[in-house]
Image (cartoon, rainbow, N blue to C red; front, side, top):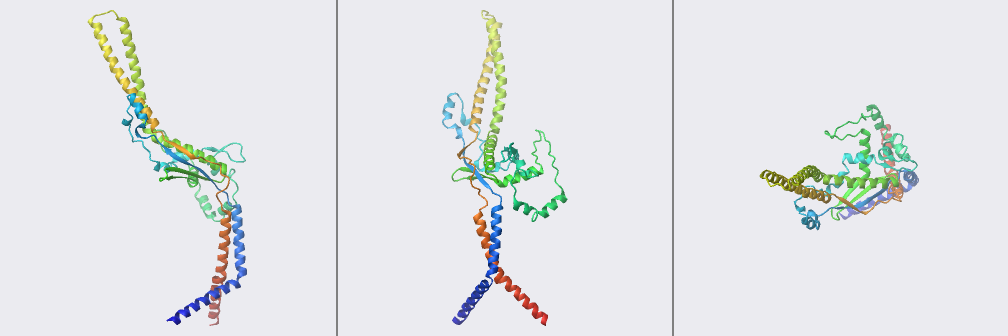
Length: 375
């Protein structure tokens, strides 16, 4: 048994030495592969489009339920903050999903940005979807890819034709969101380039934007931050805002009615100051009762209106920026050194595989064919 083990070890050593011998004999081929791949990696590293990353870190802020210390002050005015509805709470867990909102993306893509080399600002939509590619820097490998690997797809698109670009008109009664084909493409581009993550342990939101130019990345990040604040606020205060608008409308009606009753009561008092008839006293009592009733409703609505206003303020979300957006100095992509090292190693491996395995397989195949030919 020990003899078998020794034989296996000797065979493995012989095989390893044979592989090393083949690699040494084909060292010129290995060097050629390595240099060729290294040159290819160097070209890719040089001509690849740069990507700049920037963003900010935000902390969601909200007023404690009941208004905190504000509730004690409000109680002095007869306002009970604890009676307000808490159904408007919006969890920070859903904040990242707001970026997928179609209205959010559409509003973002039509935000204007300053592009280097152009005096007038352009929209993000035009920057990415311009047919002539005027606003983006020339991408050599992107062009080669489109007309090599992407050529079949381009031919298929030409055969199919472009989808209808007409946008559906809709009314406020049928609030249907409509995106053209190119707007949908731009929306997908923004989805890949903009991310918002929530760290549940530390309780902060991290926004990251990746763009081909540093200034455009910073401008887009600012727009996303502003729109995010806007949409979070709209979602949170929508219910209480509607309630406040309803109370405000009713308050204005009752206020007008109260002022009218108050004026009638004052006129009657001035005209009947010295009269003591039962008829005049009855009319005065009626006006007093109407005045007291209207005033009670007016006072109650005034209290409810103040409650609603405080509720709107309470539910207005705010995102405190603890790490602001900064124009990036260095590109995050491509990592030229990593690309160069990776292609060099890949070329070395390809050269060794060709010399050690491919040549042996080809040689065995030739020998087999020659034997069959002799037979």
